[in-house]
Image 1: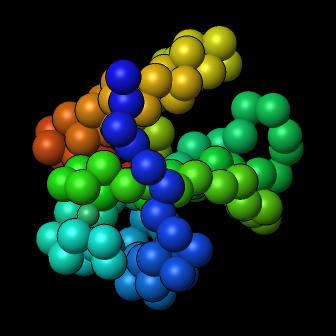
Image 2: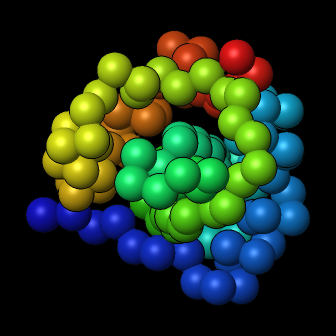
Length: 117
Ligand SMILES: [Zn+2]
């Protein structure tokens, strides 16, 4: 059982105003839901569509998240989950507990946030 919930539209808007440019800042940002500085982010090249990336933000403390697909004109970021096949990504993302736990570990180990490749 997962208790992950989506950020509201207003919370998502507030977070995106604080987020650094992709590949830029490295400090987690404040969560508009619980107030802790525990909102993290991860993005990867969309394996199903060209010139597009998939972008997640999540709060490790209160377990809210948001994911979206963004059009991009270029991509130059590292991806610590690059080794995953499309199928492995689908399996991992379908289990929010496992997915965000994996991302939290990558953040702790310094592989996230991503830097320019
Ligand atoms: Zn929170």
